[in-house]
Image (cartoon, rainbow over all chains, first blue to last red; front, side):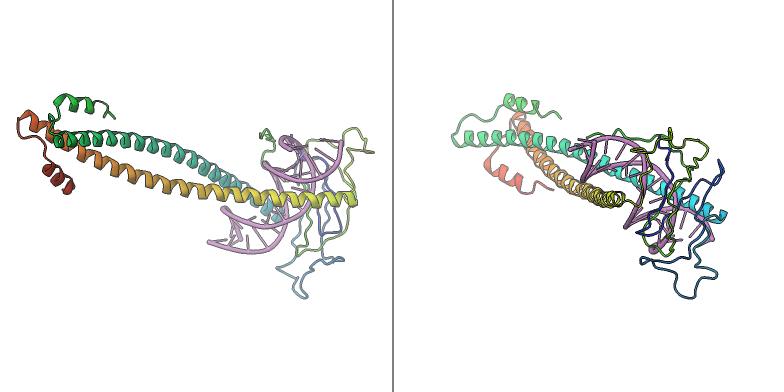
Length: 150
Length: 150
DNA sequence: GAAGATTGCGCAATGG
DNA sequence: TCCATTGCGCAATCTT
């Protein structure tokens, strides 16, 4: 639905304005034709002298011109698409990293807990020795390795 | 918060029209004033010729118009700046998360190693019990944790 | 319903 | 010279 209706007119206070109409399709194609003009309001006209060959405003009707414009428009679209894609990828990367982070955090929590249990066992054992109680038992050991699953 | 927009149409090769303001090198300042209404191909000119109130092309000379344009231009600039900022933030977030990840990974590595050492100690102890050797001794423990690395 | 925010689009300048 | 990027303005749409 973005059929670009109403063609445009030009302002006048700020600068230039032109209307380009599709060159093919339906005929009709009014064009402002050219621009030497000047700047009543401060436009930056062409530097004095140079204007014969290169730096001329370029005929906006010329096929050359239209072709170049079209090419550039394509390039622009392509570039923007690429840019957008990249941005999206970056966003995705963030989520990916966040997930990874959570996983790691969970793992740390688990390891920490395991470690804590083992350390406690050691302490207990140490005390047992100190207090001259019976040494660690196989049963205890087994119980421990139980939740060490990973 | 939702982006339901999507012109969907608008193929790509549409060279339509455009107006340009800005004082570029090319002058051109005359004012075409009215719309030629030359719809390309589609033939969708002004609806029912009613152009008295709303649907009129809006006088581009009007102060009203110019003012609106200017405001919009500001808004656009602002919006784009914001957008750019956000993108940058996202990029920064990625790096931040990557760092965090490395930290966590390192921590995991450490914990894992510690755990491994302790487990080995337990095993050793278990074997000692099984083989009916002397129980774990404080000295042994100390010695062990010392060069647990190699 | 108007004012601001977004978004697609084309132009032109500029970079590679 | 050509394509890629980027800033900019216009207009159509959302969103407020």
